[in-house]
Amino acid sequence: MFKDNVCTSKIVLITMKLFKIFMQLCHIIIPILVVIILSLALYKYIINPNDETRKKLLYRFRNSLIGLLVVFLLPVALNYLFTALKPDEYYLSACWDESDTEVNLLYESNNDLNRITYKVPELDYTVLDNDNTSANTKVLPVAEKIWHQVVNGDFHYNAENTEQIPIKGNLIDCSSYVSWVLYEMGYKDFAGGQHRTRDFMKTDWHKKYGWTEISVAAGEDVTNKVKPGDIVVRTNVAKNGKVGYGHVSIVAAVKDGNVYSYDCGDESLWRNSKGGPQNMTWFMKDDRPGKIIRIS
Image (tube, rainbow, N blue to C red; front, side, top):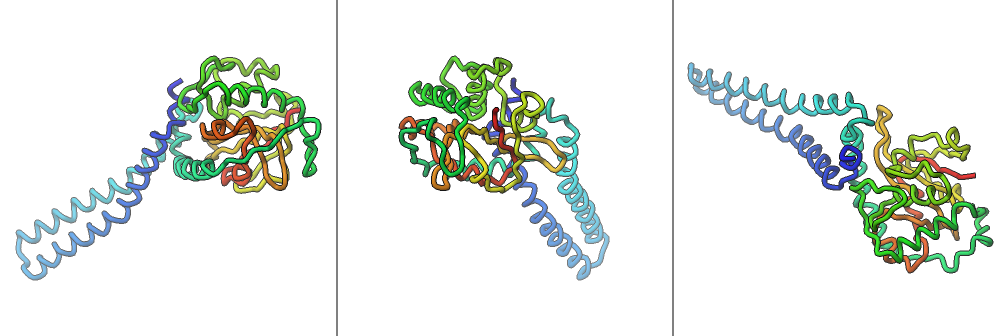
């Protein structure tokens, strides 16, 4: 459980991000310091060439060379280590690959979520045929039912615990909500440990259940592609193909160019919802790749 939880921790992500920034600063600052130190040692030797100044110059040169090797080789060694680790066994490796984008998204999404106060009034699944979309009446009634349990059940957001499905307590995150909905729809293999966003991304749902999958490119705006009842997942994918963590939600409605979703990615969503889904149009334009999962 720890391996699965650790990379969803904001503390771990931010620590990795800060360490990467520190190493980047070292790559800039240390070579400058080395040049300055060697220049001073060389200057002293030129104006006073003797054994003592020569020894100091050689001493400075040797230590500077060792320092540069450490500074430049340490990130290479760490990248090799995390790349060599299997992401399914050591989730820190996937987390290391995507920590930059994940941390940036934490702040971007929080800023967006703070502005989300919209509500789709009186959602009626029999008349949700708008903006050339049609409602999936198989998904939406269950998604709405679970959503109201969250809204009225004093739930709290927690992405650092793997919830057991169906959820018995009052802790939830985006992927445990979607896992819970699918379980209540009759897909009992979602029982037990929740499917995380990386699982929704990696699984071939067409092969498993015959559902439709629509690939989504990084940064692609899928506002005009999604339909009510679609599951939208977007995660980081490293250059070596490792799938990281991301976000997933269920589309409730598409109205006037906006996408409204049942989304448990932030506690403010259901506390500000007044019972309705929230405007998640920003997520439809997210900078991570992903896919649309359409249950049939």
